[in-house]
Image (cartoon, rainbow, N blue to C red):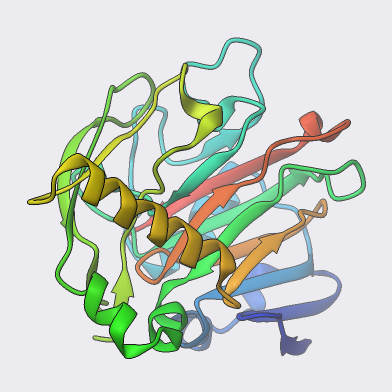
Length: 261
């Protein structure tokens, strides 16, 4: 088994052909995940839903949604939620509108789209992002509270207020929780209404656009091109994620995802 750095953050753990996920040391994986934010596991054997859940449950209780534990992320002809559409998905953290926020996200790629273009999952390591900000910009964002609201059309929805910057519940490092506004691809499906608490609309929108710009310009922003067989483990408390718009024949991309509490 070989471990190398993933740029601009995270680790790649590569097994010999058809390695077993269950050969991985649970404690070491969890430590590496908290230290690095993202683990890409390659050359491991495919697993069915039951096996995925068994592996994931080593790290904690699994979060149960209306559909069960395993979400199948595929493009739908008439999507009730934009995560099933062809368009871009804004940066966000999972569980913002749920009863609990997952510690980890666990993905398996059933069918990739790296060769056909589009559909890359985007990640921002917010711990490293905040560490890299100049002191005056960090101070500008430090005390902001943001209100989010979206209609429940699939497995999540409602309204929530959250501080933009807070401490990671496990590492105590500063991290950022943010749902990116102004997503032109999500105007008609189920847009997220976003406002900065205590600011008028013009000032609030200017701050939101600044945060968007800083996120996408950060050197700790990562586009992951999915290859069939990829497994990805993500620290949901420190990373935001989204998705690029699908291009070409990328519509065949298929992922499975589990939330670990």
